[in-house]
Length: 106
Image 1 (cartoon, helix red, strand yellow):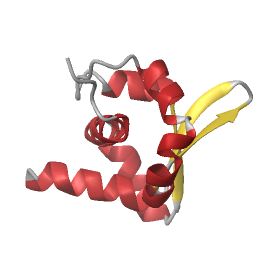
Image 2 (tube, helix red, strand yellow):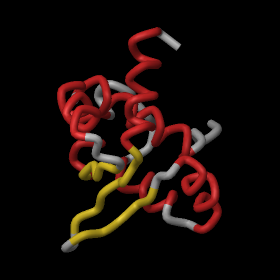
Image 3 (tube, one colour):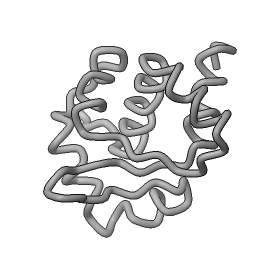
């Protein structure tokens, strides 16, 4: 079985997050906040919306490898640790784009 592309998988999980947390994204847009940190637990919940063969923790570990850094950087995504907790930091514009894709069925 071919493994899913980790960057595409992360984008699918972010799309699932956008579906689950549309209200949060509305607040981000209204406030003009440019970036948003998403805790790993939110991505685990998003996995219910966008199933993947990855365990979320393994996905983030794989994405931390230099192999994916350029692709993530182009998207404005970074994986950060803050006080021992793991987050995906993404531009609000990306979350808005993913939400629009959901609304238009793209």
